[in-house]
Length: 120
Image (tube, rainbow, N blue to C red; front, side, top):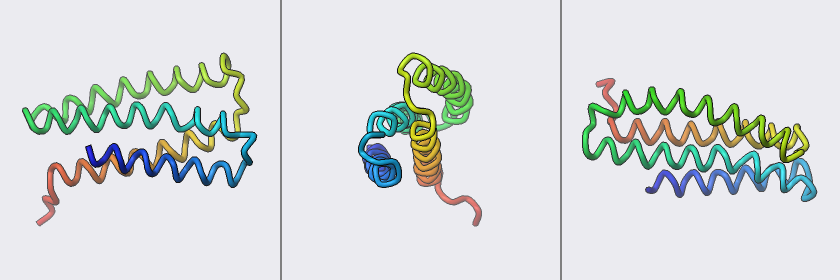
């Protein structure tokens, strides 16, 4: 659950930087760009941690399935946000990509923590 808090904090930081870069009038686009990756990333981390606790061997198949699901969900999310919600594309895309990268880095470090450093 700690990873989810890190993700929320990182999203708040990206939101603040987005407001500095694009202004308060882009808040709607920035929040929409952050919401999808934060919700999907948090769900992914929680599901991975629970699976690792119960059955560690199932984590890799879960991650492969989650990868495909994320591709579909994110594609649909971006399409809906830009078309149906009539958001300005640049602030939305910048906040989406920034949060996507930052949250996946947090998820990667969490996975490293779950499995330990096995280079030794």
